[in-house]
Image (cartoon, rainbow, N blue to C red; front, side):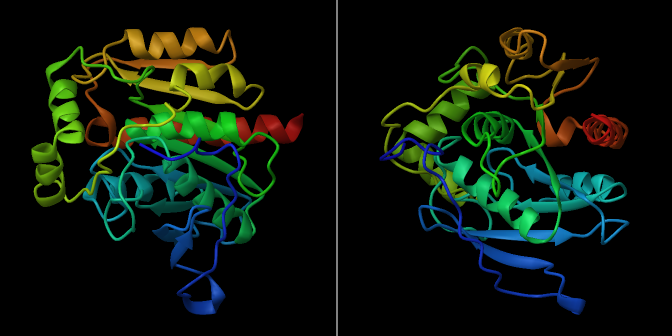
Length: 281
């Protein structure tokens, strides 16, 4: 669903549009490398001078204003600064969703914004489609100062593209690939979907994982996920060849709706621990 390989030459221009009190930007419109306007919001967390910022990447049909995204952001904001944003085609952002391809550029713009706000360590946390995006972003932005990530968390992420092994994923493919489905997506799900197929097919999540090391990686997945069964997180973990931590959560379903405050708190603790370990090294 793109005219070129997203992320391989991605840079972002991050001009602030609105400002909060004291010069701290609470809301902004970010501009991606391919010119899409992305809505974003910033919570400085408990320590406005803190080094760590968490950038949350939502799932398909999500957005920064969705209640579960706001809830999860609130839990992380007890530990660190948090940036939320809406992927292209979602919420108040421009463009059309490419369902995990050029969304890498949206995430790169959000990470660059976090660094422009003074955060020296940025952790990306993605859910479902956002989980695939954080994996691909980490693989494609190694060593790029403004857009690199310092740790990665993928929750309920797919391992491979074109998966149709569950009823929810078959319905999702109908929404994405059929004209009637895209109309349902636009009117019923408030998500504008690009009408063209991927060209070329982007690097898959499982192909991305081996390229992420030595960046810390956490893979989180529920054993009752109705979209992606447990072979997906196991494939991702195996591809990391020991370079990832895998949490299989008993009784958990899919993505933001299934992520309890307790689980998000544990992920926040992992983020803090990975930062402490990196600082010690």
